[in-house]
Image (cartoon, rainbow, N blue to C red; front, top):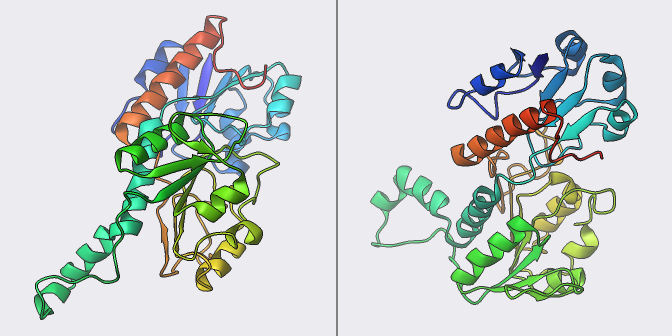
Amino acid sequence: MQIVITDGYTLNPGDLSWEPLKEFGEVKYYDRTPVQLLAECCTDADIIITNKTPLSAVSIHSFSKLKFISVTATGYNVVDTVAAKERGIIVSNVPVYGTDSVAQHTFALILELANQPGAHARSVANGDWSKSTDWSYTLQPTTEISGKTLGIVGFGRIGRKVAEIAKAFGMQVIFNNKGKQSELATAVTMEELFAQSDFISLHCPLTKENDSFVDKALLSRMKSTASLINTSRGQLINEKDLAEALQEKILAAAALDVLRQEPPPADHPLIGLSNCIITPHIAWITREARKRLMQTTFENVKAFIEGKPQHVVNP
């Protein structure tokens, strides 16, 4: 049994261990696998473990020994699951591992927008406080989030966790499904959510229907003092529309952990805007979350080998 890890570095840069996989067979490890080298690396693979390395229909049909694909993430759009099913190849993902970490990063971004500790720390490091004539100063007004309205798009595990934290801060919480009820939040339409919220946070999976749904029309409904946060999928936002809206002050700010293309091009329209904070897709990356992710991946492989596959996404 040959197990190939196509791109293990971001998940495990050296502080965790792949050793448990050796119990199941020969393990071939790659930090990263360029698409043009995929055939060379995976020709004899029985099991492929991938994070972001794409497995197209062409690749899946060309790997004659392949029986199982384990995606070390919740999203599995890097795999052509239809082609895998045609060949009888099982695909599993890791549905739950980063709820607390992503919710935590969401609020790190919200608090940076509200209080700007990072910007003020850089100001002090640059000597601005030492030169100040006053004992206290702000770069621009800060905001108290208690009493503000947080609109959550996508009310799954992460969305609900964000709502719990928001309630602890004294925020009012709304979410975008009028057909549901929750003790944590009030259900409204998408249009109402964008119009009423002081902060909007995206927590929904990417589908064909919601690709680029945050567009000029929705952004134009936002308060000029409101902010948009995305720790979900970059493709949910029309980035050109958002860049224009930020430049025109249609909304106050955005804080993004994900972009449509990662890594982004150097001339990305949102990078460098004074009212847009961007972090490099790190909401998921705490050691605790990565440890859970790897453990479930080991369990997925074990379950497949024992003939009881779990977390199957192409039944």
